[in-house]
Structure formats: C-alpha cells, structure tokens
View 1: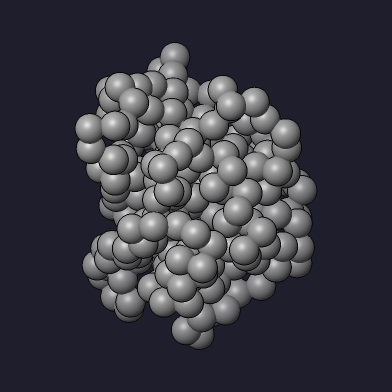
View 2: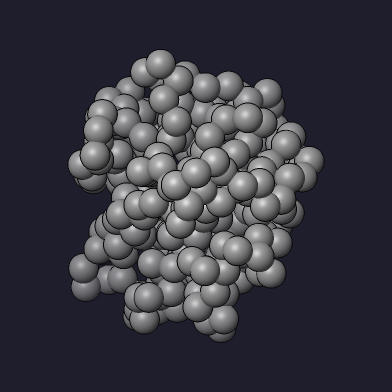
Amino acid sequence: MSYSSGSPRTTGSAGSPRRTGPAGGGSPEVLDRRTGPGGEVVLRRHGDLLQIIVNGCFLMDTSDGRSERVLVRSALAGLPRGTAPDAPRLLIGGLGVGFSLDEAASQPRWGSITVVEREPAILDWHRRGPLAEVSGRALADPRTRLVKADLLDFLRAPAPDADRYDALCLDIDNGPDWTVTEGNEGLYSPAGLAACAARLNPGGVLAVWSARPSPAFEDALRHSGYQRVATEEIPVVRGVPDVVHLAVRPA
C-alpha cells in the first residue's frame, strides 16, 4: 500500500470494499491506530482476520490472498523464455497484508525481492506486529529488502542500471480505475507507466493488481509502448473478478 499523496476516496459499485472475505466473529478489535503520510491507518482483528483500514475506508484483509499470489506468479511466468535471467530481480509496489511478498519468497527463482511501502505503520506491523503471521518467513529471507518510500518517488529517482528490475508487481490500492487516494492516478498515467518502464530491464514484466477489469488501462499500456498486454481474471466469491494486468517492456 505504497500510495501517493491525496485525499482518500472510494468509487466503484456502491463503494464496495476491496478484497473482503467472510467476516470474523464478534466486533472488530482495533490493534493499532496511527497517522501516517496518507492519513489515518488502522489495523484491526475481526475473528481470525486481520484488516487494514485507511481513513475509514476498508482496504484489505487476510481472508483470501489468491489474486495477490497470482500477481507474482504471473509476473514470473511472463518473463521471456530463453532470455530471462537466472535470478530475476523483483520489485513489489505496496506491502499490504503481505501475500505478494510471501508468494515471492516461496519462489526460489527470484534473485532479489524489493518491496516499496510508504506507511511506517504497515512496515512495523509486519516487522514487529501481527502481520508477521503472513510475512515473517519472507522477511527472514536474505533476498528480501523493504524500502520506506512513496512508490512514484522511488520510480522517478535517478538510479543506475543495477537498480533496474526484471519484474514490477503493483499492488497499490484498488487498481487503475479505483484508487484509494487521488494522487495514485498518476501511477497509471502515461508518465507513471513510463516511470515503471524506465525501472524495468528490456523484456521485463509489469503486473498490476486491480479489483476489476479495465479495458481503458489495457489501451493505456499499449499506447505507452508495452507489448504482450493481457488480463488474467481471478474469480471471487461475489461480484466482478479480481484481475492482474500484464505487459512487457520491449526488448
């Protein structure tokens, strides 16, 4: 959840919350509440579930991480056959509840795993708090590096070729058509997509999580010069499927 600055807003079908699973028993228990770069961030426990709330907007919980895991698996599978590096470098935008990171660490092929997250509270909840239930194994992996930064700032910062990546997985708020903060729209703009491409090695894969399909975003990827644009759907219990948008920087 390394989102950019701006006021939170919810859109979409009746403001439906992102990635909700079956509610736990009883009332939610607030475990921690902090003010960070994006406003108020709350960690709750509801039965067996851990939930992240941002400025009163339900963001995600630990009920079902299938689509976040598909995000990482599809990025790895999308690397060009025959020319992909032996130990590809992965950049994950947004730590969230940790499913994407956990999936990456379960794959021995990744040579390095960098996660950019701007909320200190979320980093703390993984390093020393309840979300270590999901990410503890991955954080102990020597390939893993956590970076506290806004993702757009990180992407735009001057970087040597050694700081390029073979795959970039974006798990930022609810996707290109449903941002939690208005500033996140810049990430999916032509300039944002160009910043992503600049941090990818030739032939590198961009994978973007979204709470619903976005034909307009597919067009934006093509217009930004990406190739092999595709959308993978992940069925959910109710409503439209989660999706992963995939694209490749030309070699």
